[in-house]
Length: 303
Ligand SMILES: NC(=O)c1ccc[n+]([C@@H]2O[C@H](COP(=O)([O-])OP(=O)(O)OC[C@H]3O[C@@H](n4cnc5c(N)ncnc54)[C@H](OP(=O)(O)O)[C@@H]3O)[C@@H](O)[C@H]2O)c1
Image (cartoon, rainbow, N blue to C red; front, side, top):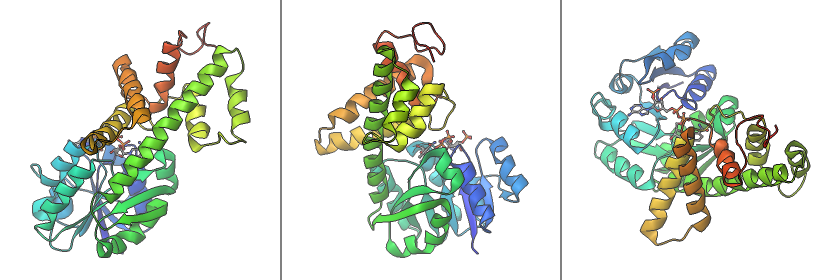
């Protein structure tokens, strides 16, 4: 099996890298904050001192970092991957970044014969741990097929959206449009139940069997009820994703009124100090707007 590089061992990157190791791939990893690489080292991965040191030994490198600026730094910054990459190498960007930046990164890498596959994911930390992510890929078909066995370790639904780089990121933007609307719908439904004095947990249990069922109601609805706001998906990353969607929509002159509202409420959560919480904590914004005290176990908001 090929020797794989993995840069970015956060909430998502760490379990994904562990799954590659368990599947039998030799792995060399790097994370900016070195301590986060320790579980990988314990599991048998080699730890490199920089992204460039990863590219020196791996012909396929996965990158899973926060945003456009982080991908730029990992690819082209000091000690970045690019100078050590060779023709026909493949870089897989598993994070959620803008389609425009993805296209620009792909063009720069193509100048040295390197292929970029943008392969953002959906399914959250649980999907990353279980290897059941949905993966939406963009980029040249031959490069996609070369890395498909690896992607199938990480996800159970791997779709090549298109040969144009950025196609995967467009699909991920669509995912975030639908997810954000559902997240807010669940937050409003549970707040409505609570304001009516009806047990919101029982309401969720009832809704799970009907047309309102969604994975968001199941996972994030549970988080909202139990106040389990440790990330998960950090609110600042959700805010980043909605910013990416709205910037693309602005460039197209495309109205996305529901997404725009979701972005404003996510801004509010961040402004209220929730940036590092799971984005399901947006229920606290809805509760605050309703005059409810969002703190757990408060008299006006029994949980
Ligand atoms: N969490 C989810 O449920 C989820 C689901 C789907 C997609 N995503 C996407 O997946 C990506 C990673 O998310 P996550 O939840 O794993 O985030 P996270 O836990 O915050 O980890 C972010 C990673 O990016 C690295 N990083 C940030 N800035 C960097 C820079 N300038 N140079 C090098 N490395 C840098 C961090 O390194 P340090 O450890 O040094 O900070 C860390 O490894 C994001 O694009 C996110 O939108 C997340």
